[in-house]
Image 1 (cartoon, rainbow, N blue to C red):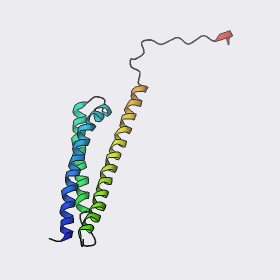
Image 2 (cartoon, rainbow, N blue to C red; image 1 turned 60 degrees about the vertical axis):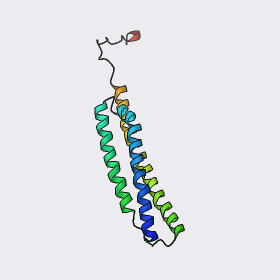
Image 3 (cartoon, one colour; image 1 turned 180 degrees about the vertical axis):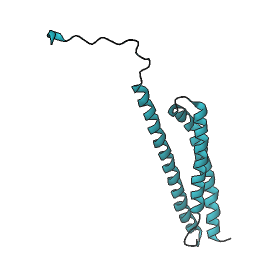
Amino acid sequence: MSMTVTTYLTYLAVAVPLTIWVARTLSRNGRIFLVDVFDGNEEFADAVNRLLVVGFYLLNLGFVTLFLRSKDPVADASGVFEALSVKLGVVMLMLGCIHLANVWVFNRIRRRSQAERMITPPVPPNAVLAPHPEPYGY
């Protein structure tokens, strides 16, 4: 087996489980954040969480697959490590960027819903106050 094929197999053996682990970790630990974003609606938050996981898998595993190919053949063991370090480093950066983008989007949604809650009074007014009389008779 050539060193290029060894590089490909090692890359897939590390990148795919890494993607699965990150998706599961984000899903499990991000649930409480999504429940807060969606004002305690757990059912909706869980549905969005599942959709995010599917999208995360599609995007990242698609990237992992597209990034599999290398331009130059790998000649020796040091070439395997060099190719793997670049490929896995880029995959980890992609995973991190996608995670930060998700957090940013949901934080904006959360801020907007909190701002709307602060604008809306907790109870409707029960009476209208009479206008304040003008001082000095003006």
